[in-house]
Amino acid sequence: MKNAEDVTFGGSGLNRAAAMRGTEKAKASTGDFIIFVWRGKILMDLDNEPTLAQFRFPHPLCKDADEVFLGCENDQNYIAFDISKWEPAEDDQPDPNVFFDPTQQRHPLLEEKYAFCELRGHMLNLTKREAELCSIAKGLLHWNKSQKYCSSCAGLLQTKLSGWQKNCSGCGATHFPRTDPVVIMLITKGDKVLLGRSPHWPEKMYSLLAGFVEPGETIEGAVRREVMEESGIKVGPVTYLASQPWVFPNSLMFGCHGTALTEAIEIDPNEIDDAKWISKSDLLDVFAGINQSILPARKGSIANFLLEKWLSDRLSD
Ligand SMILES: [Zn+2]
Image (cartoon, rainbow, N blue to C red; front, top):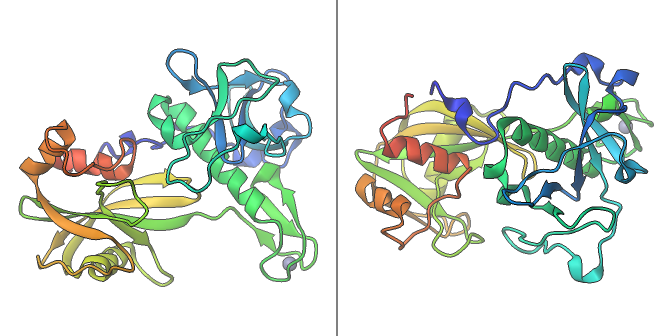
């Protein structure tokens, strides 16, 4: 797909300046662009059209916060500060038990228009640069927070390279940020596409089937295996279309097109709730809001991106 990088989180060509990591130059200094993250949520400016809240260093919230270097442009660094130690008021807590957390947290040191928000709720409001900064910050800070001990010897890990590496204080092993490959597939047969839904999704929501790539497996192999496991459908040729970093918390989605060789669906109820074939004309009505029997994949997701391309015959664009 020629315009694959038009997908949300498709990148902005940010200079990640890997050679600067771990040096004094990668530390926040006066005038650098800074963004704030709190327990995986991004600080947004909700005045008028919501946008990423960008400040210049120094800022009072940076005190005692962990910082990671995201990249640079001209002489300015982009730095993310993690202020997860901050505890909001009891009635202002996030809801960790829902598919999408709609709560917003406001810090007492900031103006009312600023709030920590779930990134998925605002990903369509961001410029390509802002989306890339949020994506790196969220993914990198999640890794830093979740990897405290060495997986070889359980020794304490020490953060190196401005947040991009950890060294074990026990055995000396080095650890790097993890990205998990996931295949997500547009499976078609003639003018029909295969959609499925997971048990924890909002009612009526259907999307493309997806699953993690396993050790020793190709992307094509993962597409065929996942579709067979979840729906009982045999897939023939598979082609790669586009990718999307999906830091919820650390996936890289490989969007593929597969041609189905069979049609009869037999779902695995342990994996998915339902799967169905839907024709192009019916799906056009779903996307237009005329047919409300199902809800399409959320805008901004690669599933939505691929389905829209398929509906408009632009898979090769
Ligand atoms: Zn170790």
